[in-house]
Image: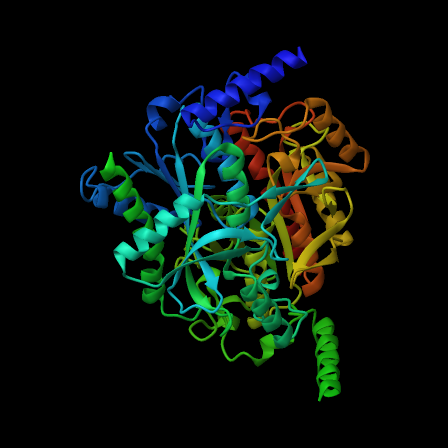
Length: 313
Length: 313
């Protein structure tokens, strides 16, 4: 029986790779009659996933729900799909945990802040794509970050997501034990995005490593949190060491994003704008309208990529 | 100079403890002219913190923004303050990261899901209370959780928040190095809450340890995530081991909440309802209206505590 199961799994995995279908590396899932995606307020027993989501080719994710709504309106206009001025409904209206919008082959989903928050969303998103029988899906995180040694407003395309010791790995705790996972991101996709940045030629864009932390204040060596136990010199030493190892920005989701893309066969990329240069300060004091323009930059870059890709077909 | 600073700090700490004022264990903060609480969209230079927030005695925090709005309406009616039917404005309307509502001495704030998300909120909340010169503040997390060996709908008041190896500690990574912090919660407050539960006598309430994880699926031994590498037997063994050490529920914020309360002199408690019994399953399949009623239980319990406390004055 165990051998048969292993054989069956191997055949399925091969088929999965051949079709470029989204994989769920979870043998238990196949035994479940229905699946409740609790944090999306969607269920396979009440929603027709292939009909609703089967055509998805691009998924863009970001922290803020309102930004992800702005993005779906932007991408629909750019791709000339849907009606101008259409108010896209939130597919996850039954919950306030995440927001989800769809325009043609593009899905836009919010993920909140931090590794645990994006991980819950990704578990349910990967299952959604699997139940919908999606294939050849590209997923891109478009976010905000703190830059290291870059002019604010610069965009960083992540080469590798690194942990607080600058290693390209993500530690997942399973049944109380540590499991280390790779945080490799799709090299070809990263290069394609850099090509799009050159095509656009509207803002500074670099490829660099991204430091992924579990905390915004102490975890990112800030001096302006409620708690701080280190000196300014120690802070600067840490940030300069990060820069020396190739880190160009800091955020809070890239490592688990990369690890989960790898495990489920999704081509993934992380594109974040830098809101400040952390070598020059900690507080985000740039005027609101300037920050708002910065936040459109990853959207423009990813919009260009999607437009190019769909135009080629 | 260093000695003077140390002396000054010691005097301030003593004063802080004497007044029961909210402390910020961060010497850098005192050197800052203004403070931008970025994720609240509030600034000391544009908002009068003592006038806006100086009277706060109770802060209630929870994951979902809509639940925290429901709570402020509920507590205002219970305490008979404000006008019935009043639509409380979101104090953090300038951002969609968190939502914040205030009624008299009670503040209600959402924190999203997971340790990093609640930690950002707590850093900025503690600074807000400090800038507002608040004293004698009690903070209670009212949330949802998975129960272990309890009838769904039971409420757990946390004795100790424990990590995935069941130790009462929280690991904070600072400048790439691990720092272990205590997850002790206020014993007297826990007992007072248990007294309120007996007074109310409306639902099963227990005091127990709370397992705090960085992930909802693999981190909580679920079999229904997109990724699963263990058997049902291994899952059950882990959950039973947790139960044996005194764990009665699992959630994703209590450990950093306890650690940060300890460091800033806030009396803290965690009150979570259990949505399911994890020894019997992983999916949250209880009907929506039943779940909704469950979620009012921590609110009722904490409402009773606040009412008793303010009534005594």
